[in-house]
Image (cartoon, rainbow, N blue to C red; front, side, top):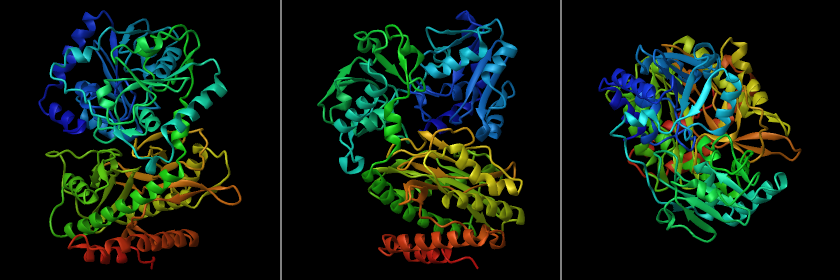
Length: 598
């Protein structure tokens, strides 16, 4: 059972108020005035195992980002604009829900908890987050690590922790050997911090990339959840049972007790251990002798620039995914006029079509399928028994993706169910204009995510429209579907570089009415003049029924027709293999869906 469905199931038992009361009793027994509960685990990942869904357990909120403060008389939940509606619908009346960045935990603490002692689990708060919070409250609130997590104390039937085995990851997909990656990391560390003798690896996706290994500890991200230490001599000491890594090459690997990470660090002195404050737990920092060096892990930047082999794998996986998506969209268009299609059924059919490929591993995240007003909930998750049929004469937003051998996909298509309104078509066309603005953009080296975000939003702004999430995020190679360090957003100062794979996903959301998002993945390339540009990786039609051609200029129309021509040229031959009895009909659907605009 996924964490999403599990959390919905426990909320359905009507125990949320009792749990909050039990937590407050634990807080009092621990001698603190309140406790901070983040949505996260010791690895600070976006996806966490069910055993670490503490925020969902206590509040009912199942979004992928959030943090709460619980005190004797108040319970406050914070998340970003993607989840404003979802917070309100999933939590009970005892919770106050606030949207970041307009509201922040630090401001709330200063206004409501000055002079109080607030506890936190040092394994769940990374160093950087703790430092920012301490700086913001400026000693007016006492932040103290707790000996035990109070939520765990009231959660007797926690799901077991995952303990999958590491799986070898072929050099065919990676393009670099493990030793080449280790050498590149050590070279970067020594260039910037020559006294460092060891680096704590606290991001499981980074460890998977470094070792050329994958795992099954999470439903959607193929990693093994483990910490490791990279020493200057090239040894990687993994804090895990060696049996879990018995299937990969053991050369250069050592193992240590995962319950005693301090033992791996005890041999290093002042300034000799480097930690990444964005992912390293506060608890581990406390085990370092003297002061640790705080710096971004070199793995983060190295992993973001894809090798030629990785880009080839991305291209291959997106062709497989496109065939699945075309079959699915044909099925949906054929079925909607005949009978109701529930949101959960959409998820099931997507998995069914993707699973026809032997290279498909799993969905890359929990499918977002929102019909009508549910589409306006940016990261809405349909749950069996609580989902709805896709309403006719509305829009249906479908955001999904797959993990394949060598690459990760992420695609959003908004489709017309029945006859869309003029308002829907107007908004969709402007979202398309925004999408095309980024897809056509050429930009110089050093351009950052803020600049590209503004270029993308400009057509929406001209129409008085906008959206509350970022325009694009990095994507891993058969790893995290959301990958740093770069993104395209209003706050991303990181330069966008050649070799990065990012999403292009502007949107518009009418609360209670409809949601629109158009998402392709793009690979950043460099042309002969040195300028950068976005190369589309996604080959799936955009719903022409939702486009007002007169709102597009000549260049935009040319781009769309050329895009659809390429979709047809690349994907039609794959459907002609006729794996399914319905593939002739799917091919006909594809031909019609990629016709030039009238």
